[in-house]
Each structure stands twice: as structure tokens, then as C-alpha cells.
Image: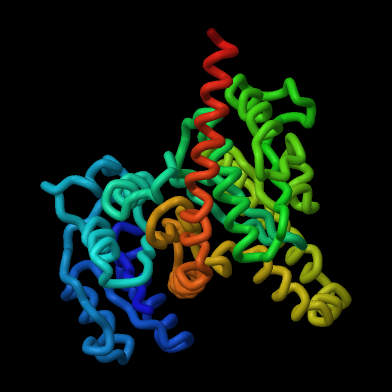
Length: 346
């Protein structure tokens, strides 16, 4: 399977993204299409000892910056490496797209170019929180504002993902909230709670507080993209802070502390790797007709390599077919919920 990589528009220079592609090819044998400034791509490959002919290079030096409007990705008048990559995917020139670029632009472009699965109203950006038991968080940044019906749909998308990828027969659905009581939260969250409680085919367990997340409170955690993104980045920051403090304490001053540190060095490395977001690659958009993976804007070469690995794995899981198979049924469930809600408000 060929993975299409947008090498432009990230926080790092294109050379770092290209290095990640090289690592993926060397480690996994991945076929790659590199989209971006052709000269930079060719020069970087040569500097890394790679042959340009081993890659498909699509020259498109224009790119969408982190500050640009998301609509640029879908504009027919504005060429960019991101939109070119998405058009290649839509035209069947690869199995998945990976980009470290502007999240809003990638979401908008993917929605309008790659398209949503029939019956899906909003794609959702999802990410696996790897605690002792993995939890799928969605949305984690694409949909800053949502309706209660969107949150219900996210639950169906996440449930299908965990069923197909992890074999969980009835994934537990939790709604991220500031309390477990049914009346807690914003009006939209309260409405979503009521919809989820009455939804067919979902194992909804109720509201989940932030403190319960690392301890396996649910299998799928549903929230709006604004809340999810803050939660995700706060978790990353806390994990990094905790590891740095632990390192300071273990490898502190004095011979005894240093000897103790040497004794647990290997375990600490394993723990750091467990908490390192670079190890988990990127976040797939659920609900699209083809795989689009959003890697962190600050991804280094190792993170890009892992995002490429994840893109290949995601494309091969059959999750998209699973979602498409059930899309009509959960779309009907959402329509029923809307009609009921309209009747109650009349």
C-alpha cells in the first residue's frame, strides 16, 4: 500500500518530515508518495543516502501555513501540497494521506475532497489514549463547536472503531463532563446525555470525569473538539512534567542517587516511551471514505514514521467499511432523536 505524505506546512522544516518518510521506508518497507517542494525533497533524500526513484515525488511547493484559513485546502484557486495530497487519495493514487499541517485545513479539505461516508454528518478527529486499557477519544480537535446530535454520532463512530480494531463486542461509551450526575454540563452536553441514554446499539455508561480517564472508565470517550484538544495537550504536558521530575529525583545529586538511577534506567526509558506522544503517530479522521491521518504539528522524524505506520495499519483494519455498513442505521437513529427532540421543544 502506498502512503501519501504531505511534507510541507508543519512546525518543523520539510527535511525533518522527509526523514520520517525515509525511516518508515527503511523500517517497514512502506511505499511512499512525497508531496511538496520537489527540490527540497530530492536534496533531502540525497543527503540521507536515498535514491529519489525509490519514491514517488509530486512537486507542489505551495503550502498552507498554521495561520491560513482552513478553506484554502478545498479552494480550486489555491494549490497546496495538502490539497494535492488529498486529491491524489480521492483519485485512488494511494491508500492513505498523512499530514502534520493545519488541522482545520486538513479537516475541511478531507471533508470536501475525500468526502464523508454516506450517512455521516461530521467526521471526527480521534486518538487512542494508551493507558493500561486503551480509550478512544473523539473529537480531539476538528469540531470545536458541536450539537448534541454530533456527539451522538461520534459515539457510533467510536463504537464501530473499537469493535473492529480491538474486538470489544459492546464498547463502553462515556461522555466527558464536569460531573457524573445527569443534569451536569452545558445544555448541549445534557441533551447529548439524554440522546445517548436512549440510543439503540450503544453501551452508554454515563458521564465520565477527567480524573477517571486514566483508570479505564470507558472504551470510547466522547466530547467536542475544543474540550478534547485541551484535555489531550494537558495530558501530554502533565506526563512530560512528571517524567522530568522523576528523572530529577532519581538521578539527583549524590553517589547513592546516581547508583539507584542506573539500576532503574531501563525501566524509566520504557516508561518515557509509554508516555511519549511521538510513539503513537497520528490521529485518524473517522467518518471519511478513505484514511486521512493528522500527525502532530510538531512531529519529528520518529513521530512521522509512526504516523505512516499507523496510516498503513488503519487502512488495513476495515474500519471504514465497518462504519459504512452501519452508517445508515445510526443515521436513522440520529434522525429519530432529532424528531423526538423537535417534538418536545414544540
